[in-house]
Amino acid sequence: MGLGAWRCTRRLRRYSLGWKTARAPSRAWYTLATSSVSLPSVMQNVKQLYALVCETQRYSAVLDAVIASAGLLRAEKKLRPHLAKVLVFELLLGKGFRGGGGRWKPLLARHQARLKAELARLKVHRGVSRNEDLLEVGSKLGPASQVPRFVRVNTLKTCPDDVVDYFKRQGFSYQGRASSLEELRALKGKHFALDLLLPELLVFPAQTDLHEHPLYQAGHLILQDKASCLPAMLLAPPPGSHVIDACAAPGNKTSHLAAILKNQGKIFAFDLDAKRLASMATLLARAGVSCCELAEEDFLAVSPSDTRYAQVQYILLDPSCSGSGMLSRQLEEPAAEPPSKERLCALSAFQLRVLRHALSFPALQRLVYSTCSLCQEENEDVVRDALQQSLRPFRLVPILPSWPHRGLDTFPGAEHCLRASPETTLTGGFFVAVIERAEVLSSASLAEVPTPAPVPSPVPKRKRRRKAVASEGT
Image 1 (cartoon, rainbow, N blue to C red):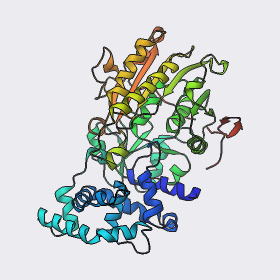
Image 2: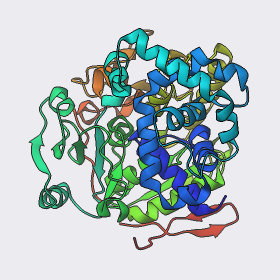
Image 3: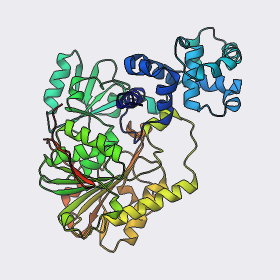
Image 4: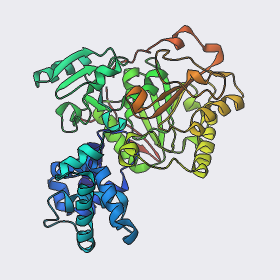
């Protein structure tokens, strides 16, 4: 599979989910792009493929019922559920497999009569005659599908006022700064607003597609969920600081840190995945980040006593997690089982280890720990255990007192942590804790909104396993 096709499938995933923070392309959408349609059509008809996936998502509950009644997945054990939905949609509700379908076409042909019969039976059962009527009866949009499109203005390249003016010239209607979540939930059509918390975050109606917008392609806009913007905003390193982004890819939070630093200072960004780092270097270059050094390295292998990190006072730690709060998961698998106890045990052990390691850096003053998980084991429990086991005096910082969703009441001070969800904050599921060295706790820590700042560009240069990010035109 060529690089162009890989990028195409990544774009497809972002289009279909209206969200760009998923950590890796879904295998189901990858399979869809390479198997259910011919590769040339994937390369040339992205909009058609986008429409196919969106319509499949819209009819998800209907397709689940038909597939289950027909026993398709029991009969075809190699067929993945997501791919089955797309194929059955195209067979029953779409245009069929005209010249496409690949190796799956004969498989579906074997079950075509049964699938059609189950669709007809479902219509009779629900008392409807049209496919569209099945949506009205059996498909209500869940909270995850109603999360708006958040767009962070990249202050390294532009400012919110200029971006607002640009959209207004394109026929969009600017509603000003929102005063409540209800105002954001009510956005429709070409209306957009400024977020009520983050001064550089614009909000558009759910499912607004800006991936082809010139400002996004030029790096002036970053498509980033509001909850994902909280870690860098709350870390709030002043310009000139040395910062570690411990588990950095795909890079949105890193670019946000650079904007807050105004490209003044140094960000040491670590990740083990070479491909993700290569994509991250491209993202940072497009965003105009010049203060970041990327390293293909395990953060746990980085020595706190290394003189290169002697001035690191700020660490952003967003480690691997179950992803149970990710919008992509909630949209694709609304009834998915929670992570197993075994998996949570393994993840939380790793998360505790990496958090304790981060707290051991000698000059550290402030750290933000975040996950896109809803599980207590990966969130409050990890923070509690790390604070109890730390050899240095750290404590949780009270942050954003008006934030409606707080940490679970599992230990004293847990209410200082933040949680997020589609239902309570109109964002993806998220957890954030701000930890500070006890003797430096100040009134600034209690501020409602730490002020982020603008920034310039990255430069790839390889040294053994390290590379620095350099500026490159967009």
